[in-house]
Length: 79
Image 1 (cartoon, rainbow, N blue to C red):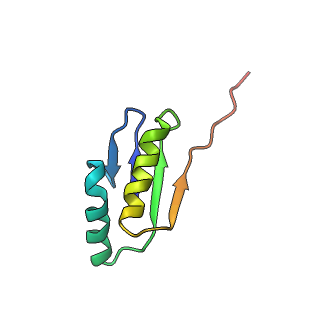
Image 2: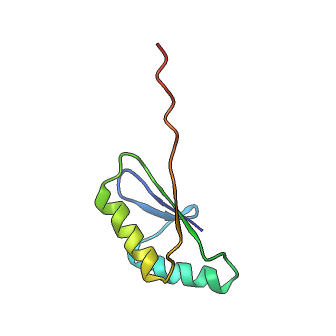
């Protein structure tokens, strides 16, 4: 399961936008359909810390404790 927080604070579950308070139910539904008990969280580097923290809280509310964080590798600026 992949949850993404964009720089403007929008949250996505997979490819579809979702409201924060709907995350626990969506995770539980995915688990009932055989998903692994792991969530990957991808947060835009320009996103607000509070938006990322709120997403983590909602993931944990679903009972998931194993959260993988995905980061983008910054490429060095060419000279």
